[in-house]
Image (cartoon, rainbow, N blue to C red; front, top):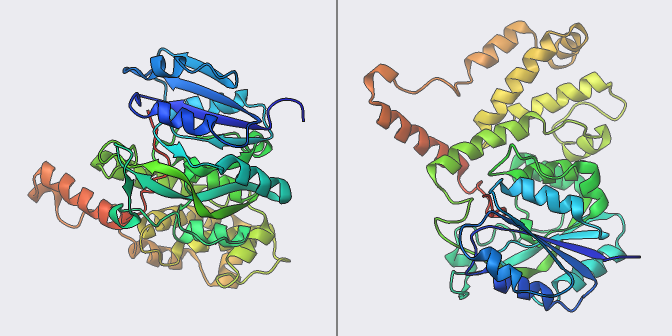
Length: 369
């Protein structure tokens, strides 16, 4: 292959204390055939000056004067990438020795796998090791490997658990998928992995590949009120398109215990089966899913062909829809608004949102600028 085998991409933002360590952890990798694309997103501290001191010819540095957001910078770096594979590093994390070599070896030996991930160790702001028990999300990335269909099911029923900064993805996958959605701030990685899994399989290494820096209150996935509200809204947006473009065979394999249809069913019936998945009990996203499901079911009932399938196969007609909509209460407050002060309404709402989320705010995507 002419040119770099791997493109390492690193957006940076206000990480003057950590960025040198991140860069050094890449440059010290035993696998050396890579380009290192760095783009600073308008840092207001000394991050750009520190990056500029590195003279390794593999580094290509873009110093942006204006902050535009992490997804914008990520996508620009992906457009510049020339390698067969693309590996991400956050500007406050550190790669462990041998990361690149082990990931390249696996993907070269398994050409049908689209991406490779790993587990994570944890460090604090001073670089001291943290036990997984000391980190609220410490074991979320310790996942077994699953088939493509099993991952689809897990993502729908549970959510994201992939450690974004450990990822190495075939560049052709990014080209086909179109990169990150800049409308997302909390869950752009989850949105991308949902789209990824409709087309590709992945593998997770048993060992930690990075030292993930935990900065309480500073990580963009921290449990602030704004992040919690935005997260649940982004879950809704992702859920609304979760099944778009999904192959029927992949869907049936993923949800085989919950569908009546087989591979010979019409496309209309498969779409209806997908809609019915939103009404299966979900501890964390039940309200979000039922809101999506009601809208989809309403649209099906407005279509004569789909309405006939709903009635004949599933016993669902307009009256049944009315009953379903009467038992779903996502939007009406539990108490009359006129009797409660505005600040108390907000506090109660945030409490309910955080309860629903649990640990669903995954600490994988950090550098949201």
